[in-house]
Length: 158
Ligand code: CUA
Image (cartoon, rainbow, N blue to C red):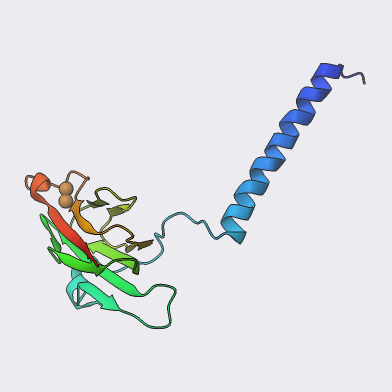
């Protein structure tokens, strides 16, 4: 079978590109640990208030983990608990959040924290707050008449 020279080059280019992409994805996922945000952690939305860690929302220092603090938020129409929280500058923080009723957003304005909170699931994000100041948390999923009033605040203090 005769394959034209340009066709061969094109085939080699295509297959090589595919191999490069698959290698990049493979290394990124399995070696660097870049996984999609976890949807595997679940919580019964009716028992959120009595289930750890959501029975004690707010900032908690933890030992022996890859992060120094856990920052727990419970969302419900139309507020977040806590409504305001202080976080030390440069602290490595795991944000853990869920919702008691409908889908809410969890966007920390001015940072790259932006999660969807779904009833029954726990959304988590590990981050370091390296800028001091006030950061507004806003709900960016339409959740009802009070959607636009749904906010909280993170104060990063030195
Ligand atoms: Cu909660 Cu919009």
